[in-house]
Amino acid sequence: MLLRYGKNLNLKLPDELRPALKDPFGELFKDGAEAVKKALNSSLDYEGIVSVGDVTTYHLLTIGITPSLCIVDGKVMRKKADGRILEKIEDAKLKSIEVENPSGMITDELKFTIKKYLQAQEKVIIEVKGEEDLATLPAIFYAPYGYIVMYGQPTKGVVRVKINKKNKQKAKKIIKKMEEV
Image 1 (cartoon, rainbow, N blue to C red):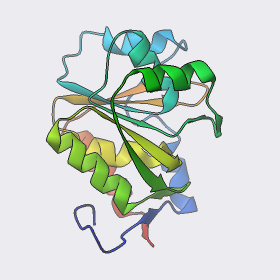
Image 2 (image 1 turned 180 degrees about the horizontal axis):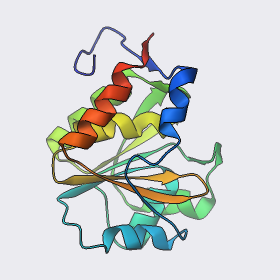
Image 3 (image 1 turned 45 degrees about the horizontal axis):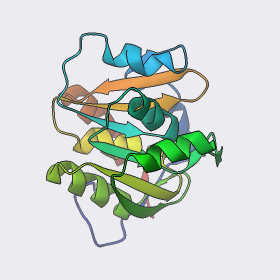
């Protein structure tokens, strides 16, 4: 299901699967802006970072780290992101790729774009028109071993997911349970 493209294989998150995504996928770091620093200063070696979400991407850029891949939607908790967040992301001067991805979905276009730019090892920002929340799943699935994926857990902090076989299988298991539309 993940590797087939061009057949409009968009995936929809069914309501019964939503509770499985409430808990952090990896290690949760609390304390707001300091969470990103703590996640990176905890003696974990990594080869690259994928950031999912405007606030997580903003904090990484603010501390001088440009992720290998940034996935943003210009929103924070479904409201337009603060101007300083949007400005910091724009100031990163990375190639920007726009993709469509409605709420509660993972479109084929989003999956393909994540996979393509992780394989190309070209630093880009994927600007999602719609919602980027579920992009964490294909990011975990397609990120190379040795990478980390960081995403915001609303009102709780930032989650750091080490890319290993266990986490890739966990992401794949959830994706396989999604509905093809």
